[in-house]
Image 1 (cartoon, rainbow, N blue to C red):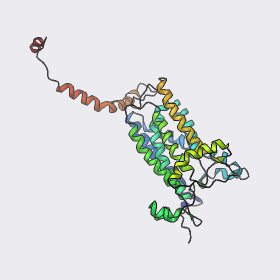
Image 2 (spheres, rainbow, N blue to C red):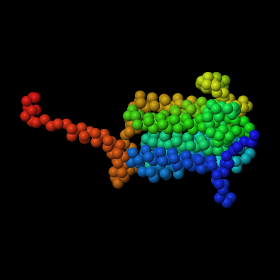
Image 3 (cartoon, rainbow, N blue to C red):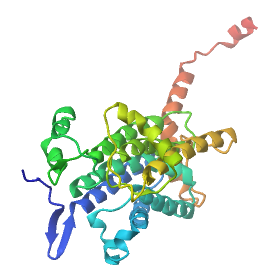
Image 4 (cartoon, one colour):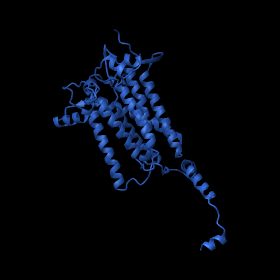
Length: 348
């Protein structure tokens, strides 16, 4: 039976071929920006700030993602340097993208006079939204899939539609749709972050840290199912440790994707995921115990470089945020009955 594949080229404009991969990544970036703009509006942050951030952040993320991937796959590119620039064929790493975007964000936020953690918190749900959508680019390119599975597993147990099942048929062999697993995990994470950011106990920087905790937990378990993981040769104790952490997946009937022993025995994304979860938890604990996180997520955000003319606009976000509280407070004051002076003297 022939493998049914989606054409990775969406359309052509003369000699220019526009790939679905690029369209999907562009859509992911735009939707993520809209999520950040809507939240930033509550704090009076102009949407132009996020639009400029996107113009700087997307190229930085792509460069970081490509450098990260090529660095661990250098043997495939050293004799074909031109292929390094062919990102439309896939081959970018999400952790590299995050590194590039965070470095860009750090300097951009500082240039604009904003606290890095406050803006990073606002962007956290948008990052997950972007990753949720962006994974479908891997689907179109028929990459980042998992190990072999039976067709019945996809159709009967997962109840996937035909267009996904057919695309997971690679050279006559069906594979785990790990792109879908990660996309759904990101969707659940978006819901968690949207709920968490309205909790009064949340401090500055903690939503961003929660993003890393959530995403990294899912990535750790999903990564082991894949057959294209970046890896290195690690000590046996580390291999045993990683296998032990992943063992609950075996109980549910999952098997690890094949990893060439000659290439490596420790998946880099798994190890990095564990490190990020530990680092994020320590970050939250240390900032709370040392008093370095005095600001709450709900506190106003004001740029240190704001001019006198800009301050009223920025204050609008704070005013909108606390409008309901003031309304309730004022209503309570109006409802309090006045006690005549004579009655007050009698009580005294």
